[in-house]
Amino acid sequence: QVQLAESGGGLVQAGGSLNLSCAASGGTFSSSAMAWFRQAPGKEREFVAISSRTGTYIFYSDSVKGRFTISRDNAKNMVYLQMNSLRPEDTAVYLCAGSTAPMVSDYGDYRQYDYWGQGTQVTVSS
Image (cartoon, rainbow, N blue to C red):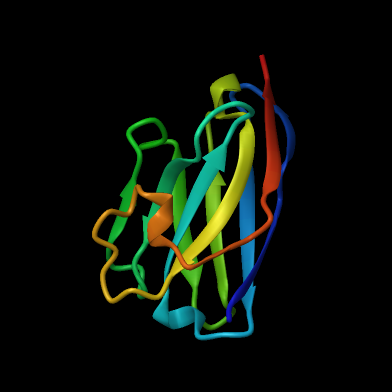
């Protein structure tokens, strides 16, 4: 069973940047598609970005496209989320998730993922 641990969250002013990291241990990280979700208080968990096993296929939500970049390093069992031009509406707990399915057919559906980290808080002030 893969375990995930996110880090890199914090408080930043609007327009600023943060780089989130997700460290994986205890399983076959390179066999998993990896994604980032976020959840704000009182709101549903929202898809942010996904990387296929090798990073060949990458998709973003419309709300972050052009501002966020997902990447992974299979040699280090790490996945990253570089967040630029942050906005107050980006404030949320950001969670790393993995799927062992050969293909994640509906990558925006959080129920498609097999394991999750605890999350890291990102707060963007206006």
